[in-house]
Image (cartoon, rainbow, N blue to C red; front, side, top):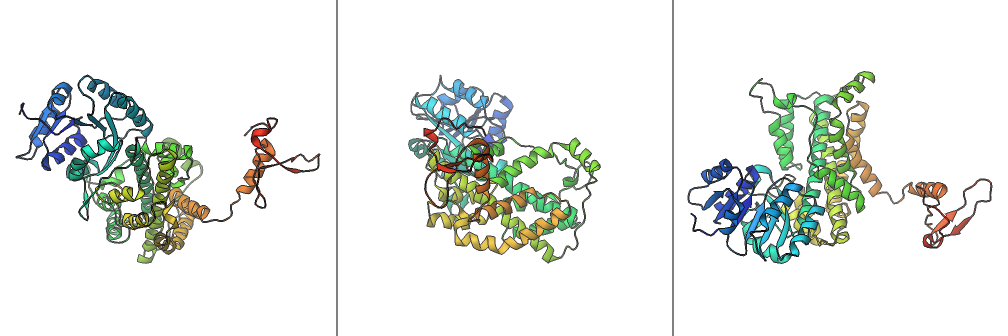
Length: 492
């Protein structure tokens, strides 16, 4: 196999890297992978489908020399310094016009730096989100590449071949310029955080509130997956409730710790939303709840101190379950709306040219947040490419209006029973604020002007104004130009 020239190279032969490469080989491409661990390189070749061309090597130089030029090289290594280390180790062997792809969950700001760094050397660098987990990588993931168009064209046929398919359409598309691929994947993960939090709250209401056992919960989620909530996360949730622990024989969900982990992408979504700024409170809440789940000792102590006992809700009829289904459906729509509105804002603010129609199109298959709702969103964005928020479409409004009443009912009952539903309630709060033609923030503007002379605008005339709020003088209101009055300090 030493004389064969390969189409595509992979750096990092963990499960994701090797599965992605084996998927590519199954589609007829000749592939080669590198890993310092000789066992992983050997395992790659052993697991290859008979008749495919797959090789594993243990030096970067060996891999690079056997790639057709211009080379196409992808890395699947941990985000951060490992990515930079791989790039530096690659540089002695790669040449102008080669394409290097980071398929990990890198922060888009790091990707921007790497794009510029390698551009100066004539090398194309692409940040690419991959969603679907281990199985998706092997059988067809959702793929979110960003970078320059020339690089995209060079890898497009290969990525289209290995991606998931919906209606014979590949679940991969060019996401936009520079770091758009990793930005879209970051927001994808933020939405994922939110939906998982919302599902866990619906589970809690049914488990601790209505007293459903795991078999009953599995039946509920199975039914939901056959209805309007059809999605990958609902599907796997139904399976989780039935899984037994090999060691104890108990249902494993009941013996898993309630301290949730995270890898930072949800936090990045929240941080970058504040920088834009754009409002994504349900995603923010999901991040915060994972954090508070880690306060186990404090939560146990607080539960004893405040005697926080869950009050069981009455009834577990199909009508009761339907209310919870509607509440979850409502909140999931809101979570998508927040994430997609963030992408809309970032597309122009960061000059990425992200097509939201393409984003929801490729999320329909292969990825963790795939859902029947995405078909509705896809039609909406195809009709209006400049749509700022999916809540502004009649098709989505019909879904939300249908579920809104039950969402409020479930939240009210859960709060009365002391079952935390911060995700669900944040979704309703966002919806109410977004649909409110008038908000109480006029008072906030008055407060800011009172203590910090920050000025405000009026509803009856144009301009920027400041009031002398001191009780000892006659209150006056006068026009104010912030740039022309250095005597007014910024004190907030």
